[in-house]
Image 1: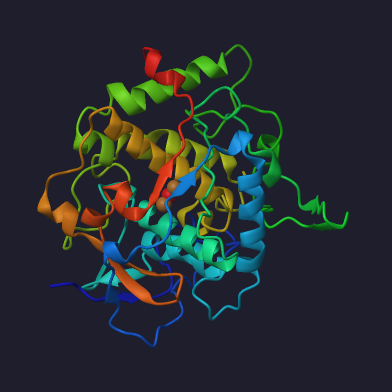
Image 2 (image 1 turned 135 degrees about the vertical axis):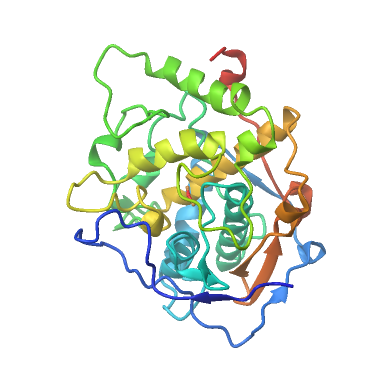
Length: 356
Ligand code: C2O
């Protein structure tokens, strides 16, 4: 039997309640007239296969994302496809907003991490494609695992305005977000082992980078638990960092990029990228997570397998699809990308050759 979730204002994940919140705690999606939600069938996924490409040498993909996002940002608040409502999904599933049988749901720090985010991006991408009427639309992925080009904040995201080539006018850039670390928007190389402090000189950032990737994708990711994270099922207390095995990528480079990008301000909460409740408000979140999702496919290509526990396959989430209909999706249906009709264009993975 499926447990019915209920939703309330976000309650957890704010380290210090005296700090000012820059985003709303009201994370529940707009109510649907269609309840209960329908079960999503993967054979209803129609259309061509979308190919996600690396962000750094595909400006035309980024441009499409920008155009689609401009439309998405313009949707009204009662539309579940609006950018704000899409951003709130992350908060709802991560900050004690969704409840199941009186217990809060937390999709981080466990084996729910990869499949939840895969489905989240899946619908986000389909909604964007639908808004620009492009069935081929695919999110670009921020290939931060490649030190040749991928290690800086993607250029098209950093400026508040951009010049529209068609009319020569300066227009607001939909990919911009004001709550980012201003020191990390230029040519500074990303630190995949970021601990909250910029390193001082004398480090070879690229070497640290390759070693980190190698460790998290190979040496420390030797089975389903070490890669995906530990078991978490209905009835368990929400898992906090430290209570469980957290998957190597989730705990490592994934979190490092979040913290590296969020705005450091002792009076705030790391908004946007540095906090669960606000991360979805940064358009970079989705291209970052496209690369995290790509790590799953790369790990699988190297021989890895999803958890074979039936409880993993049966775990499910509810999202709105591109037709604004609530649908329930299952982990077991997202393991094979051919069913989901998207894939990743290859890009170099020099860390496979580098011992940790
Ligand atoms: Cu749901 Cu990158 O976190």
